[in-house]
Image (cartoon, rainbow, N blue to C red):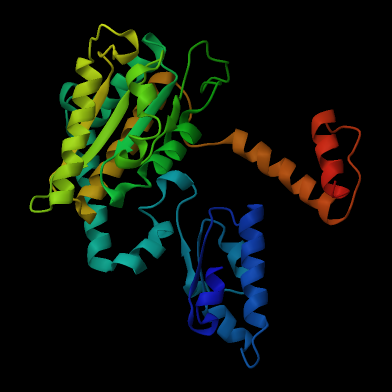
Amino acid sequence: SILQNINITETLFCISSKSLGTIETKKNTKSIIKLLNSYEDYQPDKIKQSLVIATTNIEKAKELGVPESHIMPFDYSIGGRFSVWSSIGFPLLMAIGKSNFNNFLAGAEHTDNHFQNTPFHENIPVIMALMSIWYRNFVNLPAYAVIPYDSRLSNISAWMQQLMMESNGKMVDNNGDIVDYSTSPFIFGEHGQLSQHAFFQAFHQGKDSLPIDFIGVMEKGDRNQTFLLANMLAQSAALLRGNRSEKNSNSCPGNRPSTVILMKKLTPFTLGQLLAVYEHMVYTQAVIWNINCFDQPGVELGKKLACEIVNQIENSISPTMEMDPSTKNLLNKVLNNE
């Protein structure tokens, strides 16, 4: 645990939560306060000074005893997955410094201006959204891969997974009607060098196809980076060209879709640009699909059920009659430690 490797009394804890109502957030917050209280001579006022909170629920933050000057509010209309540009980004600011964070914001603003002011036929997020809808709704491809060829971007696939699937994984439109078309594809991905030896086999020879975004950084003077770029371009070319062989098992059909995104350098500014491009892409998808990309009722259902089950496990309460047979059986196994 990271708590075992830091000096608790000299650590600033940042709690980032829109509502301060999520069960894991509440438990983590209570655990931190309990831990701070366990230190001798660590006064309550000092405990309050060791916490900062980024939230829309100011009153709830005050109830925790955090000074108002340590509460960093942001607007309730900002969805969590779109909130890195707000006070939710405070840990990032602390990690990279004010100048870098301002450049990160400037990169996003540059993309915002491009999105707002550029005609559709030259508008990068709009074009990417239209391409993704073509593959999803007209070619009927159910998945979408994001493959970075730079270790510094190794988490972007997971970030994109939440951004698109939580935003647009909806079956009800803005009029409250169930849609008769597909919405968000399943998103996955991994660093290119790792995924080449994992699931690229299916990309090239699998029965099904899917669109792929390759992301590369063109920084010169680094042989390793050159090697990564060469591999990325080779994979894109192989997907396009394919390979014909007298032996069917060696043939690759080709004509498989991919998009290559090239960045001259990876800086806070260009990272801000990239993330904002994907955000506007997802928003544009939602407009075309006529769905709300800023809520997540499916996630809320899981949270509600989790609260009920936690209470049953902690208090050894037998499953209720209303519970489905599968969950009831599993809960009994947990309660009886079978």
